Amino acid sequence: GMELVNIEIKNIPTEPDFDHSERVTDAVVEFLSRRRTSQRRTTDDPSLEPTVVISSFTVPTLERALEVDHSIDTAWLTFPDLEPLAAVRAAAERGLSGVHPARQALADSDVPSVVRRARDLGVALRPWTVNDADEIRRFVAAGVDAVITDRPSAAVALRDELVTDRVFRDETTGNGGAENTGAGNGGATEREA
Image (cartoon, rainbow, N blue to C red):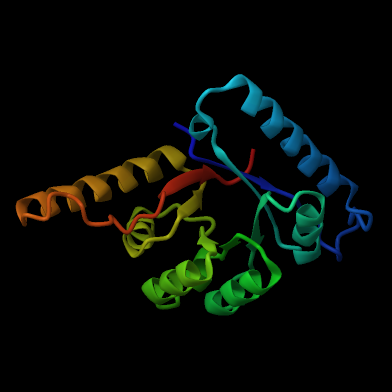
């Protein structure tokens, strides 16, 4: 099933359609807030609903989203030239709940260290756009919270394969499968709808 819905708001200051007023951000957050409220009234199990995160390359857009609804999940999409640890620290300082680093930047770093620091700071880590199977395995094994991919079915299958392998190894070593898989929620998300 769907684990995570990523809504990217493209609002880059250098582009001709840049929205200084953040009207689009306001409308998206207000819609999501109303939707969440109405779902609470109609479902017995809110865990069946996917997690929704608003992402953007533009930090002020994410800060505006938090002004409208402080409970909304937000994630900073970062370009390949930004070091992932720096992005994680900056996101935590600004109250953002996640970072979506460019896969190239994360691949060039010590992924387990970045994951540990992100967890320490309460920041979800979801690299984009990860389509290569070996790279998906590497990131999921390191414990990223999710990967943003153009191939969500393949990513979910790879994640499930890794989790099954880890549980099987734990059971054969007497750990009873109780060890944390290190795969976070391991959700795969479509790049854009």
